[in-house]
Image (cartoon, rainbow, N blue to C red; front, side, top):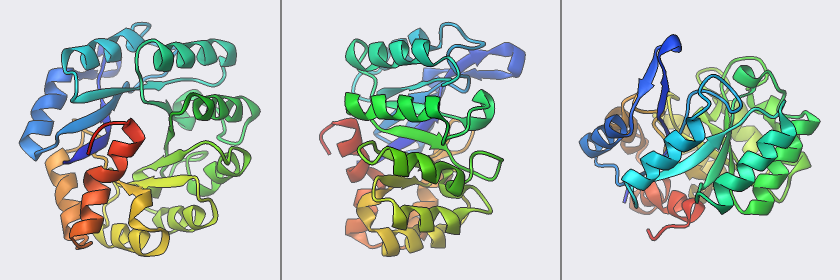
Length: 246
């Protein structure tokens, strides 16, 4: 089973973002991906006031294939806490997505930490955009991992292009950090991560349908992890995070 832990659905024409559930499913089918975590490009509260409903409707349209993550802005803390609780307890969402650049909220800020802790209490992970921009680097996110040891934190893109080694080092120091492979161009770094923190803490993602899930699957294949580790990275670990049968 292959599970993509990072795909997008949104409808914000003013920003050029029009990605449908059908596009995600087609990209998944083309790549042999069985299930995926889906989230919007924009934050709530934000430009697309229907983003929660959009993801919920997509998951309901493709049960057993799409699983929702809610993308929130910690600056609106009380509203975000209410939305997160509703998404998980009433709509069956499986995670929280945070993007420090779009929300202009530092990962180590009090509001962000409170939201991450709530996600942990609700039993779902927090997926960060973790790349090369200010406030998104692994060392920027590390204080949140230290402050929230009982919450799982996923570093989406595992440091992007220039902070991949830093992401692995941060994961070595914080056992509640999981590395996610999307849009990070180095197969050998996936292998290095598996060797240093274990195959159980690395998960596959594509950032599709903007990025190609087919290409991203090949990147994991090129990492030459061996059958058992490849199975965990491509789907076994994600199945546990999503609470689905592997």
